[in-house]
Length: 298
Image: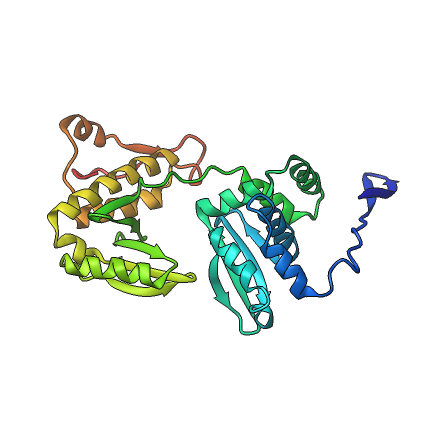
């Protein structure tokens, strides 16, 4: 890559870049040979191959912490070994568009993948340089994703029964759902059957290239010990969210705690709760304080 031309105008500078690709004609006979060679790459080399695929036929979403790849349906069998390697990195079937499908990796696994793709110092420097160009949105997003901190694992999890942990999720209406996702159907069925043997009315559904076992609030309320565990997780969620100033999210968690009759905090915390406030960075002038909520269980 080199600069071919430089234009200087009033208040504007234009640069013409020349990109020269390595000529691989004659090295591989067809795409099948390329796919076979790529599937044999080592664990250190394969993320670099994935980087080139993402830059060509993929997308990076920083807000959703997602890396997505698109493949033509007619090529799925050809790329089967590569898809297996992608699944080892956390990818799963995300969307089916008929003539094309999308595979995606999310959250902390997407961040980990972005870091692996930029682990080579020279490649990282090249991508960071490309990210400085005005229209280089994809390299810029990739660098931003690699620089994010993954969410600590386990803080939003509860152990429902021995060996079965499920994540606690709260929607905007204050409803709590326990979820456990597995890529393999057999693993998901094993969790489902274990929960049902223990007396829980758990359900199973396909989701994101795998399968999700889930339980609603009614099942949580039937087990006082499980309610206590979930309330502890909700308490941590609330404290973290208050510190971030996300008022709408705090209200949703507060509603969930009320619906589960989560126990009140200690006297010291209760004395403080009457003056609980957060800074609302979006509403009102700078420095505006809003009383968040003043109930005995918040």
